Image (cartoon, rainbow, N blue to C red; front, side):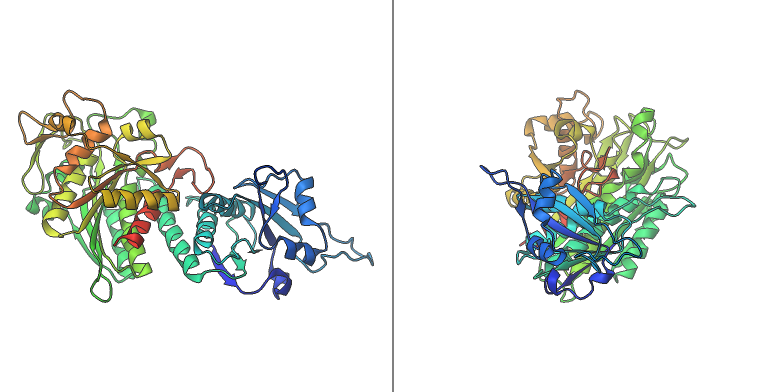
Length: 507
């Protein structure tokens, strides 16, 4: 991840411009009733420094100033041997206009992402864009820059042609705490993207468990890993059933962060669905639907990023991540439609569709968290249902909770981070749909009333006891077909910043 630093002063007082490859200046879009671009922080200083009218150059280039747009100008150099000089001699020869729109949080995040892409392959880039006393502006811009700088890990013998700029220097009166928060949030998102991008021939449940332990140990956190004998001894019938069809056995990992003072806040448990590959089992998926299933463990990656991020930021809340990890494969041991499983705590569940495996491993993990971890707040994150993405598209996660305060907090966190959520109902009339004639519950309705994301949430609710509980179905926004602003193509890392912002604001 590129480095981002603050430097005091202005462009005209900067003493290290000879080591800068590009200067970025902000341009706002015209205000209502006007057609003039709106120069922003540093534009006047840059014009004085270079001896040219940058605003006029932007107008001549028909630059709109819209959020997330850029226009690069490479200034000419004097011909070798000429005695002539230019006003910008000794200054960076590349100027990047960056559109900041109306400078909303979303606009600034998009502006940062656009600059990251315009600066690929460069060394040091300097910008007065974040020269503002408002920490939220600095945070949004830096988050956007770091998220836009991301490139997925490529398993290739060839080095990438150009990576992100080595360093971004924010010159002016910035907010260091806001910058630090942005870096932590972006790091968490990068981690989720990296883990979700790893191909599943490498990313087995054991591999994921080992990575979680390595990262947690480096951070000084407490971990436990349950293998198959331990899962059998404690009655994790859902995780075991889902993992039985694979030659690579399941795991259950817990990672715990406790503040140095013992924790003056709440205990938040984040459970993440960790299906390292999903064929659908005997209810096998079509080929096209199977291709992106290496990302079906994104929920577990979010949970891991949340506990590591809480530790790095010194959260006052204790945080535990619970990662039920399994590969849903086809084999001689595969579980079958019609099977009845006994989950952690004794609840029996009739299997209807082996491609609805996520709610089985989550049910085990949620029941375990409720019975043994005593959470004040219980959050689960999962790429759970196609119904959620059909209903809400790729832009929103489905949010289920009966706790109004948690719903409001997550909605606010979604607005601040750009990881948007939509509150969905827990429809009580649908509860009979998850009933069974041969077990306590049926995990997929026999006579679906519609609302597949709703019935899945109702099924999970049966395993959370009386806890304050939130279910986030991130099936839609966890993957993207194409890059857009700060959102990467493929695994997006959705959810890490959302949960970390919830932890920041949780009372």
